[in-house]
Length: 161
Image (cartoon, rainbow, N blue to C red):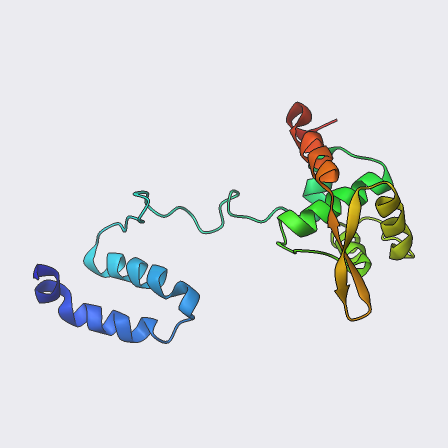
């Protein structure tokens, strides 16, 4: 193996250093550092050179940005968009009225004084449904109809009103 012959000592040093890092970044850190040491560009398994770490595509969608992109104005519609954000972008299987209130705050929107009221309104309108309880806290999920509505809002005219 030519690479061990040429870079064996470097590989061992890099390996020892990378073992100290968080497990989730070890492989990429090793590839990056090896490329720096041997003066070559690392190619990812997909065949593309790694892009900038903070590119716009890798940045998470903020709740405020999602509301703006959806173009909705009504309070209940914003609540549906924020519930969508919780499920799609925060990867929550279900959410509580408290989660929804926090999403309003993160979006810098006026949070409901009583989040149970907005949840009851959305449930009565068949936009959310009960998804079980965690202790005494009722959890909810978006209905398919609500998901379709949000996706239509996001896709109309590039997402702007």
